[in-house]
Each structure stands twice: as C-alpha cells, then as structure tokens.
Amino acid sequence: MALVEIRNLSKSFSKGGEVISPLNDVDLDIHQGDFVLLMGPSGTGKSTLLNLISGIDKPDQGTIVVDGVEVTKLSRGKLADWRAANLGYIFQTHNLIPVLTAYENVELPTLLLPLTSAERRRRVELALEAVGLSDRADHYPRQMSGGQEQRVGIARAIVAHPKVVVADEPTGSLDTKTSDQIQILLQRLNRELDITLVMVTHDSEASQIASRQMVLNEGKILESDSGHSNGTHSGQHVQLTGGQ
Ligand SMILES: Nc1ncnc2c1ncn2[C@@H]1O[C@H](COP(=O)(O)OP(=O)(O)OP(=O)(O)O)[C@@H](O)[C@H]1O
Image 1 (cartoon, protein in one colour):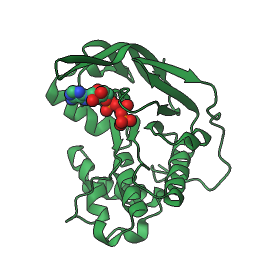
Image 2 (image 1 turned 180 degrees about the horizontal axis):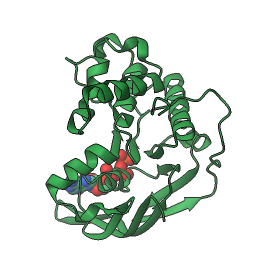
Image 3 (image 1 turned 90 degrees about the vertical axis):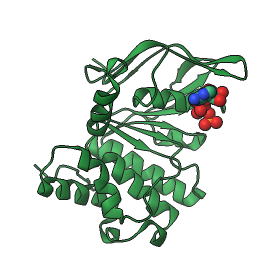
Image 4 (image 1 turned 45 degrees about the vertical axis):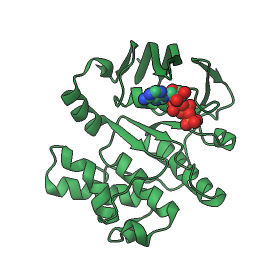
C-alpha cells in the first residue's frame, strides 16, 4: 500500500467569472521514502495539490489517503490534529516568527503534540542537529542568513516526525549556492532519515536529488523517469530518533 494514495482528485476555482480546473481527475501513489519533484508551468496547480495533500484545502472530488487515514474526510478540528502529527510544510519564505529564537521556532509545532517536556526538548535538539544548526539555537531569525533561516524552517517541518513533508519552492528565494546547499540537505534528510518529501520547484537541476519527477499540466500529472533512484547513502548519518 502506498503511503499517500490520491484518487480521482479534482479541484476548480472560480476566477473573474471563469472556472479554472488545475486538477482534473488526478491519480497518484507516493511511497514511503519517495522524494517527489513536482514541476510544471506557473498556475498549473502545484501549490493546490500540496494544499490538498496537507489538508489546508478540500477537493471538489476524489480522495487522499495518508497512511490509511482518509484526510479528505476529516473534519476541520480533526484535520488540525492530524496535520500537527503527520504533516510537515516547508514554505518558500520560511515564515519564522521574528521574536522567537531558532529553538523556539522549531519547538512551536511540538507544542500541539502530547509530549513530555524532555521528549519535546530532545526532538527540537535532534531536528536542529539534523539541519546543522545546533550552534544557532539561541539566535533570532534576524541574526541568521537566508539559508540558515530556511534550515530552521526545515527543522520545524521535521520536528514532529511527520509521515510526509511537502515543500513549496523551498529554494525559490535563495541564491544559487545556498539553494544547492538546501537541496543537498533535503536529499540527506530523505535518504538518511527516510523522510518522504513532495517538493514543488521550477529548478530543473533538482531532478538530481529527487527519486521521482512529475510534471503537472492541464489538470493532469505526468511522471517522467528521469528522477534518480533512491539508493543507500554512504555518508555520515543524521538521526531524529536519538538512537532509540
Ligand atoms: N483560492 C483560490 N481562489 C481562486 N483561484 C485560485 C485559488 N488558489 C489557486 N487558484 C488558481 O488556481 C490555479 C493554480 O494555482 P497554483 O497556485 O496551484 O499554481 P502553481 O502551479 O503552484 O503556480 P506557481 O508555479 O506560479 O506557484 C491558478 O490559476 C490560481 O490562480
């Protein structure tokens, strides 16, 4: 069984008296450990698909099942709980809270989970370590570079140990060098922590780091076979579980 099963998914919007249908009867299976790249021209529904997978928006038709839970059926209240425990979201602009430190920004999502304070601290420390920012825990966003801020955004997305992490153009606001570093970090998190990732990008070079590559156009998803196989990584392994 796939980790994410999308069936007959359709979504339309009314815009200026016109109906736009970015997703039209879409089927897609995403498996545990996949790193899916979602590409396509502007306005073709890539963000719409991420918002449906993460339960931020509801489809007009179709179902999304994540690890056996039909997300498209959950009530608003249940969706918030489900999202806190199962879904990580990496934004293009990291959306960090400026008056909180890196540690506090990463800790935020864990406050919604039933964790002891010791377990919460352990998870935040491991997430910061996974993105290479343990030494910046007490820094505020204004004291960090754009790349470091995005690392905090990534730590925040993985701290709850979500089943799926979606990323909407996570390198879209970064320079080429920083963007490459963030992509390599995402690849490591995918390979070493087995984090399932769905990433929207306009950067065709990102096909180097993903295991599957898809293009969304005219309401449909087409998968190309140019993604890289998700082999075992031989480098030093990071971990989110603290070895337990
Ligand atoms: N809430 C909304 N109300 C009306 N139209 C919407 C809404 N959300 C998205 N759309 C429209 O749906 C289409 C798909 O939008 P979406 O943001 O998913 O595209 P995208 O592929 O992510 O684009 P980009 O690459 O530019 O970010 C666009 O025409 C957009 O204007």
